[in-house]
Each structure stands twice: as C-alpha cells, then as structure tokens.
Image (cartoon, rainbow, N blue to C red; front, side):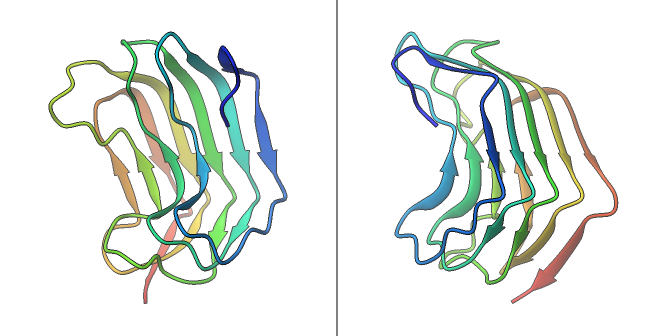
Length: 133
C-alpha cells in the first residue's frame, strides 16, 4: 500500500492472496510519506513467507496513524516464526505508530499471532483466536 506521497483512507478488503514470497499487505513508508486511516478488513491469507499484514515504520511519530486490522484470517502459518500481524518492528527507532486497532482476526501461527511494537494508543480486542500450526 504505497503511493507517491503515502496513503490516506486506504482500504484492502475481501482479498484472497496466496503463495506470497514476502507478505500480503505491507504498509511501509519511504522517506516523507504518511499512511493515515488505513483499513485491512475481512481478508483471507494463505501461503505467505513473513507476515499476512505488516505496518512497519520508517518515518517520524504520527506518519503512521489510524490503522485498523479486523476480520482477517490466515489459512496457514507463515514460513517463519514471525507473527502474521506485525505492527512496528523497529526496536531501536524511538518513533511511534499511533491509533492501531486489531480485532476479530483468526490467525494460524507458529508462535505469537500479533506483535505491536512502538505503538501508542493501540488495542487488541476479542474475539481473537490463534491456532498453532
């Protein structure tokens, strides 16, 4: 989900990607980009390598703001032990991702289903199920 200046009010809904070398939905910024009000809703992911949905961060605090990941399911685990839903993942970056909601996802995983790192004002709500692969 990259655009020339980032993305605002973007939606990925009803996708069924499979056999992915990297990941399915990657909300990742380049320099001077923003991702605001991004929704990843009711998708089915199968056969991914690293993640089903990732919102990693390379900008400053507030460049990624308002991410909702809801109603998604994975039919298989990833090829690694990384969580299928990965938000943040820059442990040495002091900047924060703002307003993240993760809810109602059914995830098959080799470990944790969700990772939130460097998130301010975020929530993970039920029902959420993690099935170990």
